[in-house]
Length: 613
Image (cartoon, rainbow, N blue to C red):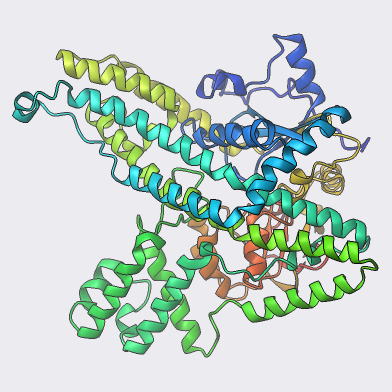
């Protein structure tokens, strides 16, 4: 580890032209030299760029989700379930990019004290998982209903007479302030629910992985993950709905009307209205839209990640892909039986290697718990990052429309350059000016500030952040860091090698994690966002910062997947395994080194990628 040096967090300078960027983000996210104790803590900790969740710099408003999970994950580890070796995850920001560090329990005696507390608290959840999970689903559907029904409307020139005759006693301005607060509260509360089960889900994975690596020292991590693959989850239901619609179009004989991408969704629906079979298909289409089209075209973490319901041409385009595949005589279904057979085979083979009844009993128990929690680990994404976030972003656009109407911002998409607390302050200015019959100060302040912030953000995007800062440990052993983010001693050594080479054009081999088995050779296509997905051609290998479940239809076109970030249990790796798609995840700089058009060989069994130049 001696060669894997990273700069001190206090040495990173502002990008020229962005001086003062710090005011765009929460003050407690900043590294500081003002306090000696805090400075020493920050310098001696190992902070890595959370590109798993944020492949791009953060907009001032979008950081709300980072704030939300900063609190939620940490509280469940530290104060609720009392995870024995781990406290929370600390967060900082440098030049718009989030850096995190897991906080361990360093006192062995404290670890021992926390074990019985954890066993009681976590044990209750594991023993009552199904009942508590059903309760969780009701809470999530309830909070989604609350946000869907939340009204955020324009301020009237004069209040309706009913305000007087009903003795309401409040104004539309007050309702706007109240409902904005409620909108933010719903967002934070949603993320409280997000982590109610998640840490326990991953903890059971990690415990099973730990047992297997000790019992079978030579077992590849990928084999362990395959033992919990092939379990049906609702995260893939949106894609399944598109497949059903493609098959229905062929059954009804209306596939010619669905046509090519040259026809937009409005034209297609209009043409289909002319026949009974067309109307049948439209009914099925409309039924699928709620809730299954509330899935983000990206990861859901960014405001620009629109849902299928926001752009219905996206799911329609995927249906066309499936129709063409079926016509060509190819299966569009996930290879579930093959994945299940491999899972059963691996479980049997490795279980037979155990020599004691005690070990076999432990294996069965840990594996059973991992299978129990697997659906939640994937399904929570649909409810939170996709369904809830999709509605949330559009409610915020309603707020933006009001601010634009009152000239606080020039365009609705400008709102993302303000933090949630700045928006609240601006709304108070706006509402009191409306109430008083004067002009607020906001129009004189925010448009200029936003113009400056846009320039800063542009420079942030042009800059490639350092992968980590601070002092790396001699041995990285924190399990979540390894299995989710893919940060290991080996990955840091690989980063150091790339740094030594310097010139990306001289790199001929990349290493990552064996995310999903299989070896393929093909032409690379670098897609940094959902906007690039349309460029993918048949037989190419997708190279991206990460992937999204909503990208699943393009798996019909491609041979394999390479991602910059993630470990063996990140969502990208899980999705690829569930679709039988060879993948290498966590390469670090795949999108920077591999260029579209290059011929590469991807080995999903070893985690190696060869680049032909």
